[in-house]
Image (cartoon, rainbow, N blue to C red; front, side, top):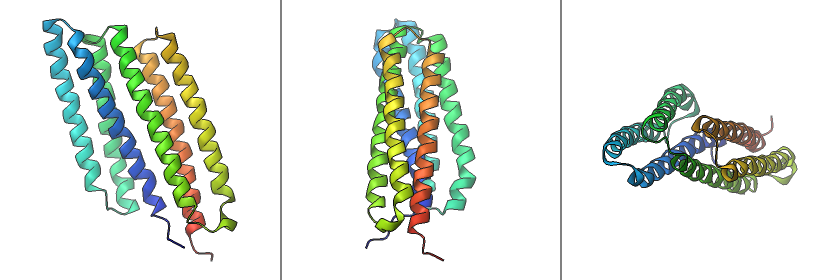
Length: 205
């Protein structure tokens, strides 16, 4: 039977991949809707977007350095990556408080980031199932339960985000808070599932 991947590291790899995908979705959305702006606002928007892209590239570079690292190295660098992520989010807030005040722009960004999150949930579930298949059937009870929980959490989070999409009148602060909540739930559920894979894959003592 094939050996599972280093599940202790897989959570960190997924964590960075998810955030990079959210950054990419945000940048693509802002670049697209910046065309709606007047000339002066458009110039300011382009400057802010350039700053966001720089933060995205710095985050990606720092994450890539750790791609082959051991778990302890990831744990030590995660605080740095968290800080970079928070700076990116703060700059998005600045964007919407200054040049991106239109509700249509904020809703467009929300829809695009929510779609990126949903894609990340599905990919994580698929990867976890693949790794669970490499674990002896007798040791899969916890993993299967956590995979089911991941499925339920994903469906619930997607339903909540869908409600906000349909409402279409919330501030960016509310939309951002909803994305942060679903992101937190995603992290918790996938971390627990990967830990279960790690335990099941470990030789019995």
